[in-house]
Image 1 (cartoon, rainbow, N blue to C red):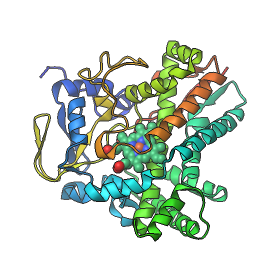
Image 2 (image 1 turned 45 degrees about the horizontal axis):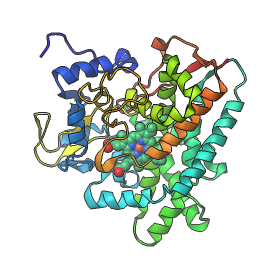
Image 3 (image 1 turned 90 degrees about the horizontal axis):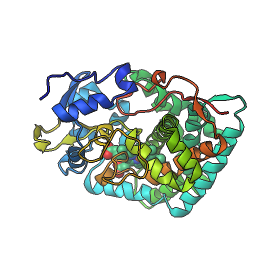
Image 4 (image 1 turned 180 degrees about the vertical axis):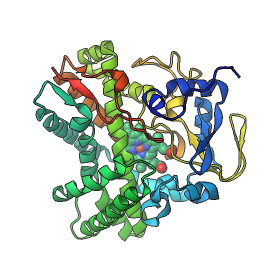
Length: 400
Ligand code: HEM
């Protein structure tokens, strides 16, 4: 144990650059008990331990397996407590998880992914065509609206209902974790919205994911609560994360102009560069809650049944035991695969779609704006103060 102390694990300096704190934890307290409002949680920070936790058969994803203190603290927000929104794969284990995951994955067909790539290009072009001045905020102009449009297309939200959909989703996206009343109200509204949408798909089926799920519910493979919960999960899991990938990825390139120049010269390098953006400064700070169903030992630390466990994906992705020179942004690096999409049974089902959106958005920005530069001091950029996500509120740039 070294004598220096751990940099703060919350607050503006941590939001702006959490990596020195993670580095300290990996070296001094790799599995640490983190105090939270109303309870405490284990935080796992090393790559090897993160893989062990994400794939551990005795770490449950079911919120009912959480300790009474964790459940009373309601850190999972109202969402983990209502069957109409919480009956989805990310809260399920074993055979139930496999069934819910299989039903939704079936909708991510290669044909649908090709269609969504073309659609992402069309939407990106339209959004960038609207930019007139020499400066822009690339989060508001592109990174935020692109993923929500693609999710609406995937789910089959009709054009005329999208504004309402955006309104509820943006309250949930932007409200502070502590603002439970505001989140509850928006969640109620979104629940009614999704229930109406499901009813619509029964009478007016389309070529979309929700229609696929409605057909399967007619066959008894998925019930009504699970259907609405799955739609809700896809919306929340697939939106903010992709906003943050596009934003954090563009920021990494703005801070590494040599890498941006290499991608402009050879766009075929883009898929590898996106993977490095995911490793270097990924969108998801910690994987979602896990709870031991029996005593579990990770990194030499015993965890008791019910104790909440968080796995720091950001920290694991900078572990020098897994990545050489981990703080360098080096597209094309060889070594361990990053954990930005998780690992094991709950590995992200939207990973391919998220990469398509990022390739289109970032590739198009690089092509259209050869002189792109940051318009503000990178040290003053506003980061979301979120325990789960790592993303920017705004990314002011000079386009030309
Ligand atoms: C699961 C990250 C985009 C849908 C996950 C997990 C991570 C993740 C880390 C695992 C969580 C855990 O084990 O606790 C990301 C990132 C994205 C992204 C970084 C963008 C860059 C998407 C998109 C969709 C999506 C676009 C859907 C359209 C899901 C679903 C799960 C999931 C449904 C749950 C899978 C399961 O429980 O089996 N994602 N995601 N994600 N993601 Fe993503």
